[in-house]
Image (tube, rainbow, N blue to C red; front, side):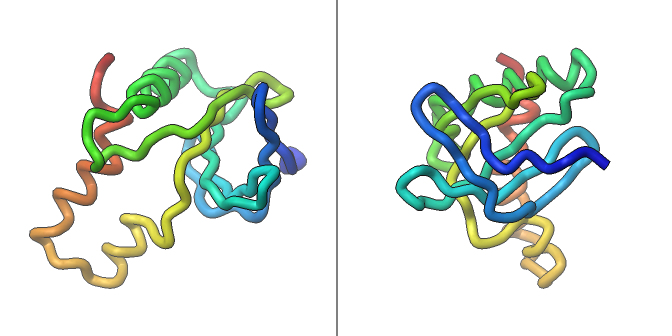
Length: 125
């Protein structure tokens, strides 16, 4: 198993890992803090991701840099890890769509929430 990177740097900020908060097939999400101690979520793509996943991740970053709606999560910062993997920083929320579904969210609320979380990764640029 690869060693967990403890800090992520961009030209203007260093983010320190607090804890992992999610993992998928092509990346991980961490709770991080910036140099002022503010908490954020950081999503990092695996260094071995396919070209298609890298392209989709770049599109996700570009789309979320200037969201057209308050329902789209705004990218605060982005960069590359020491091994060249892409990452971006976004606001940290108290929960996740997965946790809401586990708790039994009303069906009529799921579409609005899932659209907000999935639009960035599915809309072409």
